[in-house]
Amino acid sequence: MEQRRFEVAKFAVIGHRGSGMNDLQSLDQRMRAIKENSIVSFKAASNLALDFIEFDVQVTKDNCPVIFHDDHIFCEENGTVFGEKVTELTLSEFLSCGPQRDKKGKTLLRKTEEGKLVKWNVEQDDSLCTLHEAFVNVNPSLGFNIELKFDDYIVYEQGYLVHVLHSILKVVFEHGKNRPIIFSTFQPDAAILVRKLQSTYPVFFLTEGGCELYQDVRRNSLEEALKLCTEHGLQGIVSEVKGIFRNPEAVRKIKECSNKLSLFTYGKLNNVPEAVYMQHLMGIDGVIVDFVKEIAELVLDINGQGMEEMLQVKNFKPQFSQQELSFLLKLIPELIQI
Image (cartoon, rainbow, N blue to C red; front, side, top):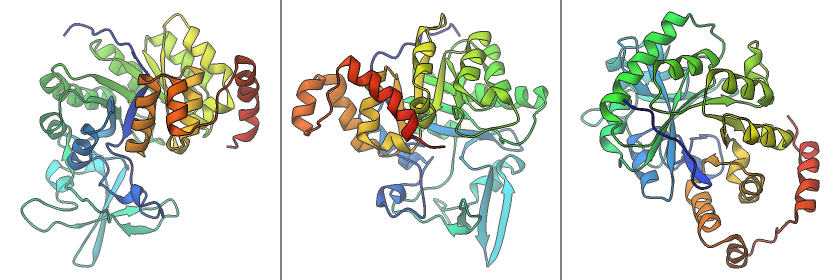
């Protein structure tokens, strides 16, 4: 397939895991509304003014790309709790977890940050799904930001990475057709390899921008992310938004580099309208968000009506001169704590 030219024509909104991630302990009902990374969530997102949905792809033991965020999956059946790495399960074992369309499935659990297992209870539940099902069932005009998901703490051999990526690329090339598609990953070697294995779709490198530190130094700063992208011909960076606010000078370096990289962000601050508006002023190309309806409506106004009219309609206050914006960009790193 021939290489497709990729440009972000406007300030883009990307739905995190479809219509937003699940936080099962959150007091905000929106974080428990629709099952993340599900066909139901993807279809709901397709009805909003979103450019892409982002979701996580892993490959089962029998080489099937499936959509699931966590490295481990936990289920309960007849009082017995079962836990395993997604990549150590067969497709049928994976799909047997959670609600089933034709029979009762195992109760799906999720491990919290504190290590507690809780029932994965949401208002609109759905069964687990494969990458193939996403292509078949979701409106082809909605872009897919496919995160290539790997364990943060495993050093992978190149042969294994190539095998996994081939399994994913096979499905993408069979069913991608004219759908806008972006690959992204936190795994530096996987990013380099998927760029080498295909040139049809752009590859973005995911980074926490220094908010978390890892043994692989390529993951530890926006500067390292920029270096990786320029050295290996990647097309963009997706940074934790706190990393951008702590280091706003990096935005200029990224946007002015010879590769003309795109720059997206993710993180909880992207659910705050004022933080999204600030990124628009800074020149960020797109935001990955959980509160998809609210942020999509805001950005629709930003891209459509013009900022002055939008501020009047929405009763927003901030309008900054270049001098004021420069001051804010110097102040924000002092306010954002790791």
